[in-house]
Amino acid sequence: AQSVTQLDSQVPVFEEAPVELRCNYSSSVSVYLFWYVQYPNQGLQLLLKYLSGSTLVESINGFEAEFNKSQTSFHLRKPSVHISDTAEYFCAVRVGGSQGNLIFGKGTKLSVKP
Amino acid sequence: DGGITQSPKYLFRKEGQNVTLSCEQNLNHDAMYWYRQDPGQGLRLIYYSQIVNDFQKGDIAEGYSVSREKKESFPLTVTSAQKNPTAFYLCASSISGPSNYGYTFGSGTRLTVV
Image (cartoon, rainbow over all chains, first blue to last red; front, side):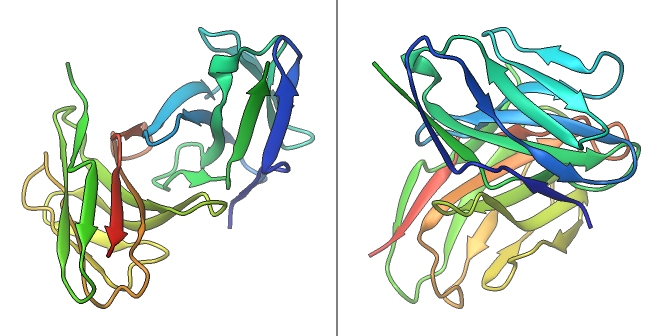
């Protein structure tokens, strides 16, 4: 069965510092990979996704994630965070071309401090 | 604009009562999902439906029931059999089948047992 591991439950960081939120998945076949962001008392919003092609994908607000097949990872990075990036981030995976549902990690709370 | 609407945003229930959470989408998506979110536990799948008049249990279906009489609607009933119903409930929808590239989420309903 597929699984998604987000290695850090909480990540505190100072404003303008770089950040990396780690995500590893277990699958030996092709996968679709997603990062979602959740602000307090709101639903999840899609941040970025990897379906195929370039292994580096970017979002409109400066986040990027790199698909690493050999390490089965899809870590999320931002070179300089803002207070407004404070939120919970969820990694999700789905086996490519299947009828299966998304499998979510348990989330990482990013706390950006001034 | 297309989207998913969950109502109400906050809901209070007395012990022993059933309560129904509403989820409506106008995205023309075939598949719909209900998740429960508790602090530190990520998203847990309650029920999902790939097509009208059909639905399947997720990982934590006990104490919950659903119906899918219309494509646009997927209400969730939290019954008195659910021993710990206080949580944040999220509804999502997606295209069904292999072209499912991710979910669209509603803004959630926070249920509190009083």
